[in-house]
Length: 122
Image 1 (cartoon, rainbow, N blue to C red):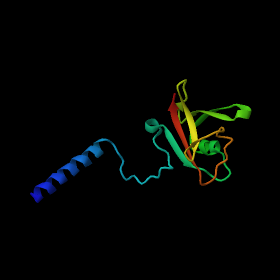
Image 2 (cartoon, rainbow, N blue to C red):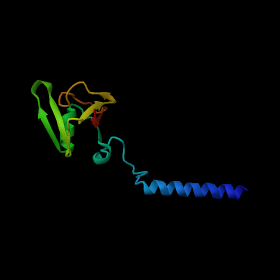
Image 3 (cartoon, one colour):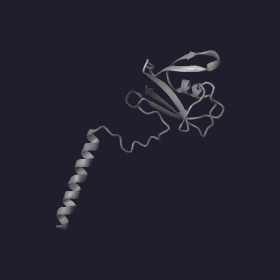
Image 4 (cartoon, rainbow, N blue to C red):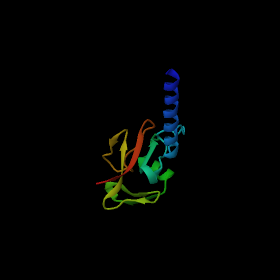
């Protein structure tokens, strides 16, 4: 009976591993969460702040952007790596899990900050 249970457990384990492999999961890739996630799939970008640089300057140095400068209100990001805002979806950013209250060019980051951009809909 014990051999049957071990065999059944092994079979379930093999089936589970096959399902993970077929789903395209990259288990154990070793990348930290602060690196870029696949924009086409998850529509999320995460990066660390850099002492004295704005969230926008860091974003601009790492990705292809389209943005509008609105003067005193600050920059509005319209597109990141070709994924453009629409009437119903747009790019928003947060700092350390809190939605931003100022434009990205107005927020000066610290090295301890985690900046997260998400393509969200209404």
